[in-house]
Length: 277
Ligand SMILES: [Cu+2]
Image 1 (cartoon, helix red, strand yellow):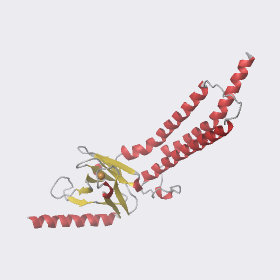
Image 2 (image 1 turned 30 degrees about the vertical axis):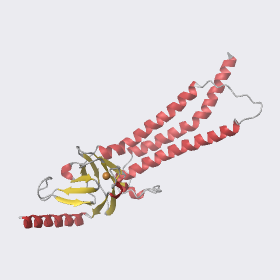
Image 3 (image 1 turned 90 degrees about the horizontal axis):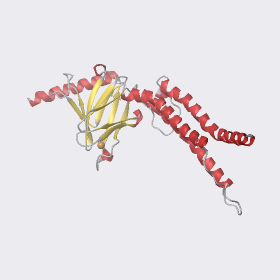
Image 4 (image 1 turned 30 degrees about the horizontal axis):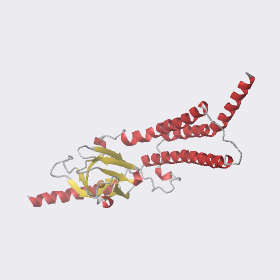
């Protein structure tokens, strides 16, 4: 009995030694995850730990970066742990003349621990990312309070449509553009994607936002860019031979400047239709 107890104690002791670092990592993760998931929307301009990523230009982009950095830290910690153990074992258990290999039958407790720890990590990451995912994909602003633009990608360009003076789409006074999307700063913009041929993907790296455009259905994304700037729209879905040159420009104007731009386009459109008559 005493011998059994001492075996059990030594097993628990060894499990404790192995389980402590992952358990500590999970605690850290939970603490950081709660912050990323439930905290206030991060101001992208104050992100000092952006490293090699392009500047985050929307509030949601800041949250995506926080998640990215969190996941990077967790995976880095496990990478270091696993590689360090691997190197230590290779050295410690290297071949020695006359030493017999040990017969290892497994350790149930240890196996449960190293399945439970990654599972806990995944659940914590899912919990932490849920807020950002909802903000991007579920909590859409109302169309009546937003600027709605239709983007119809095709091989290999972005056809952009704005409602004209009547405020409606698919009418004669629609304003169109190719490879250029003009929007005002500080306003919610909803982009409705309608692919005309194959699957494309609307990607603005600074927004950390990607949305597939699928033929036969309308997909939507929304963003609010606080400050004026110019960004690249890239197609993030291999859509054919000219995929590499499927680039657009997204120009964020100061609100008054945007209004002037839109009024100018309305005037142009009116003059065009007057000439056509
Ligand atoms: Cu494409």
